[in-house]
Image (cartoon, rainbow, N blue to C red):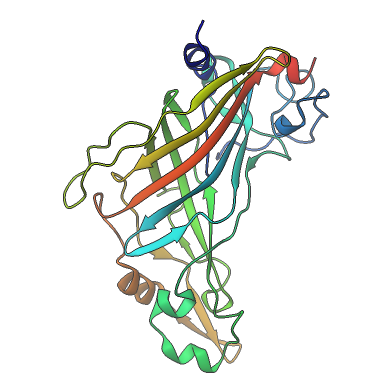
Length: 275
């Protein structure tokens, strides 16, 4: 069987991929066998979740995500690790898995996000920086080896925004429909095309690798910001949702957003990770 076909067969048991699940993590984490340490986020079918059949790890190595009129480069690696239950029904993970908490710097900082120029008088250079952290906001689904549905929410991190400033939520997520083919977006977007990974197979560890793939999507919508609140003088709350939305072009309908994600993927049978 060709590596690509092997990947498609195994992927039918692995209901997840890549950058960035609402399924509760299993308690504890067993140590993987030698050679499989990268799959530590996969629950053991022996001691954590008997329904787990496959373990996977996906590393997003670069790219970008544009939401509204703000574009954030994927300047740091992001990792999704876990496992899939029987017949790929759920993506699950233990305390070492899930989506890595990766803070990506947003160009323009908090002033670019809010348009509040006067903040420069109250915040230092480091405090003016803004970070975005993608978090899973639902259960990822694999609709094919190169067709992934990934629900996320984006935490906007800066002292001036409070601790709960988000774009998207568990009840109203940003749903990325990631493909390696060509998209069919609504206007004004034009189709963009990804790239299938280069597949290889490790016959010693029985690990399937997919390297240098590119996922794309410009068909998703994004809700408005929520929970953004500045506290003046330590006790006067000032809501910033409308300011963030106005300056950032939110909520943003389908056809105005875009993501490109460079990724590598590893997939293996759970029984090999936890013999």
